[in-house]
Image (cartoon, rainbow, N blue to C red; front, side):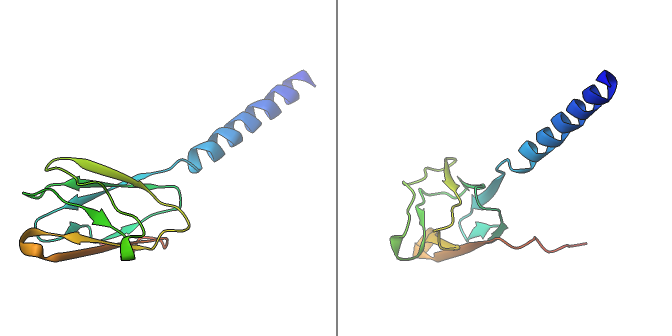
Length: 115
């Protein structure tokens, strides 16, 4: 009886540990380049983070449509972390070199399989 109780407790502990691991937020890196964002679409889950890393030659600000959210100016080699929540528009943009409009987006769908 005691042995089966221990087995049950161990199985429960493993199950709870697996569930806790599966709800952990992921970090997705988007590089800010002089000509655009890379990647320009990011596949995320709610609660994940997008980390914008400025690899361009100038300071950069990124934001949502109609300034629904906006980063602080991100210095060259600097980063900005954005947490994904339900109220966020799924597009972002910023001004690149020579005032070029740069656009990107994120999706809650599964990432396509590539070969």
